[in-house]
Picture (cartoon, rainbow, N blue to C red):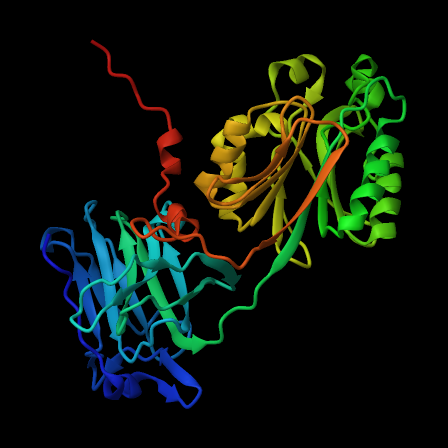
Length: 442
């Protein structure tokens, strides 16, 4: 495989298309023509001529005047490539932020097929570490904003900004308002994750038993605490789903809210929810003020819960807290890859899992494959706290044992051969493979 073409850009060239401020490098790229021709700082690229997409400057589709960079599949199902721009004067160890806006048409899987990334180069123009992908996204009208903030690796002297469209023969993507700038290192984001391991037996007030444990764990000053699945049934399995079901908000969320407000932390807990004639296995999020901040209805019901009359949920919401973005799963959800993945691609940094049973191996897998923290509270499965590498920071099957661990959500978990999978995996997963494949007859 031949090296990708690139243009060496020193500080003088950077000043033509952006600014270099006293406090650090800042490059603004929003005008892509010079004397009616494409700015020489930009190069169209592909690994082979046969897969080269059509790259052009478009004055009719721009977020900001006068134009935008366009990439079209041009009817070629093999196409993969786009635009590249090399920026110099990079200082190893300093943090840089890439921000760009795109608008795509007729692209089936934008998450995988539209890519912005930073490829770090040494003084000879060779790759010095694994590329960093811009994976943080937000809506901006008809456009989508993507960004990433990362430290420049050792030996980096320049960076190659790549804007890509892949395998989209009928698709077009426009890129505009691109900024690359030095930025202060992001502050640490420490959060104290807590789990309660409790197995009440024949206790008619099992919710109260868990609340007593919240009073115990409060001395360790958690920011968020995970409790078990379907608390009213825990240890009272004779009660059954229908008899345990109650509205949300309702009596149990009121009691949990009183405890959360008393101690000033978030609580995640499992309950059986009654909504009209439907019953759900539901996890609730209670905020520091004791309010119901959200709920999640278990999407992957085991046979036993279906036979018990429960309904499955149909969404996997994420919730923004004062320390970061969280998601919730419940027990059997961990048996399958989809629930955790759906939360991860929405930006969840921590998944809290009330669980009656299951397998620690699968909880570790969900943490590792999505590169996020898992906090579980189990009955016949371990209560645990797991980091994004799948390392178990705490686990126990004992009852009446609680744990709080401080973790830094700003920490990057990278591998020298793979890079940062938290940013990389959304660009490589293949959701379209779930489509049924026709079977040809004989």
